[in-house]
Image (spheres, rainbow, N blue to C red):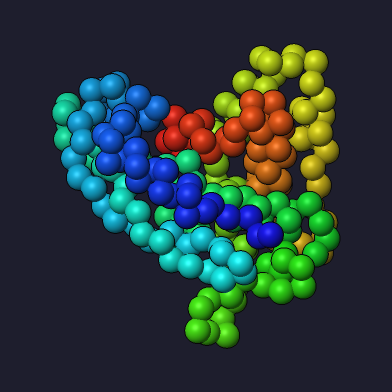
Amino acid sequence: MPPTATYEDIKAYQDKIEKNIITPESLPPCPRCNLESIYFKIHAYRERRFLIIVEMIIRAVFCPLIRFKCPGCRKTITFYPDFAIPYKHYTRQSILGFAAAYLKSDTAYEQAAMVENSAPGYPNSDATLAPSSIHRWISHLAHYTQTPRTALKLLLQKYPTSHICRDLALLIPSGRKFRSEQRKQQLIGSQRLAMLEAFFKATFRCSIFTKLARSCAFT
């Protein structure tokens, strides 16, 4: 089965919104005036389209996102649920899953988009998950620096003798996957995040993106 969030994941989040139990405590301080997030107030709800994969069909699901407002400077901050990554319509599970499939093998982007010899497709269309989407996801994931740094710190606090630092230092992408030093560094950054995600889930039984990335402002 392709990696994806489910209708149930999104419905569970909607239920939390309806019950008014989404709070801003896990957000970082205001980036403008540094006010602690516990003082943020609900400002608005913004509908967002998410793409999930159901039986190899890409389906659109709409879900509201909460925007909080800092009372100190009136800046608004979006609260992203566990299945969401800023600026992306596909869910966190799909983005990390397909990116990891490409990074951990010597396959091309076209092959990484395949699940059991076929690619997830859109309803009533011949279009499928584009290999270029995976290329963009890897570029996006490579921009995260604070989140993996914090994840590594937590892992080393839990297991000080872990070999994870050695494994991260040995990350070298296949020379067939890049033509420039910039792309090489993007691949290394994405591989680093993917490896930390695997260690983090095995250690803490949750994704880096469940709360940690949110607390690091997705940086």
